Image (cartoon, rainbow, N blue to C red; front, side, top):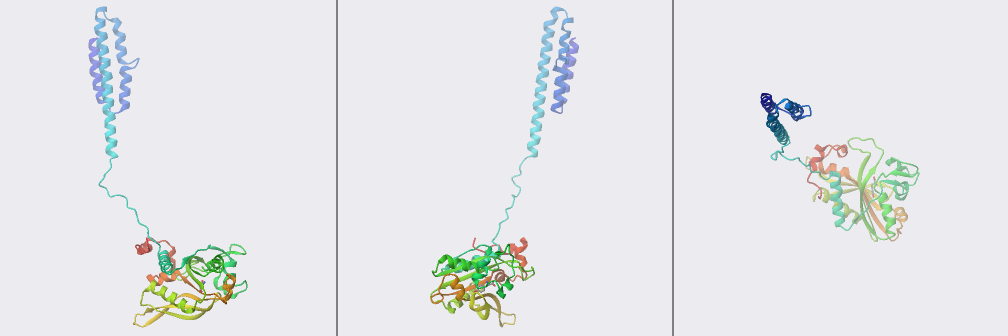
Length: 339
Ligand code: DAH
């Protein structure tokens, strides 16, 4: 019987030492220590012993039981430790790896042009005014001296949402809104914003584009004031050596009207001119509808295409680049703008 005890002691130690997983340890615990386990079975043999041998044997079985319990516990701890170390090893953070890179955004080239022009005119005492992109026919056309049957409406074929509402075809309706808001007081505004026309997109046309409108109304405003504002803007945008040229033109909201070209140096060294905007003296009808008496007040206005300016300034040959969000294109303008 002593032999059985010795055998179980040796065998259990060896088995527990070799347990590889927590499940193995549990299986061994059941094998040795459960109610019908091998240790209990040894105990049942107690009654076959002579009475004087029983206490010593009982004690020996108990000692074995405790030894097995301890061995199981130790093995379990060792396995858990091993698992923890393995996990730590796997999850270890390599602090020497390079970090994630945050890509810095930049101001869109069109917004750079707008900010640049705003900066100039705000410095000259103008206010920045804005208006809705979904505009009423009344402001977009009627108050700009283009009544329902006016043939010039066809030049600005547009997107109507119903009988009266449309995506504005130019920033000029902001003029009408600003005049009414000023109720007859002098004003100096520039109005940047998005505009829409029913064009097929190609290198020089985009159904959505941007304009900056300028409007000055006061007593004694002359064509000379307009010319000065335009020359100042052209030189601010393109450089101090530039000149402008005014050509007679037609807009329903101005009279007289001009188209404005900016000078540039051609490859052969001679001077060329390229159109940049439309302008003129505010038409008496527009003044009247806006609440100003044309006998007392005069005004000048201009409207400039932001894409056109950006294309000339940065030598861009396709207007669609501005709207297709290609980072290779946009990244070239990093570092420009105000912030
Ligand atoms: N609204 C015109 C257009 O979109 C541009 C323009 C021309 C605006 C002359 C003006 C102006 O204020 O005086 O084609």
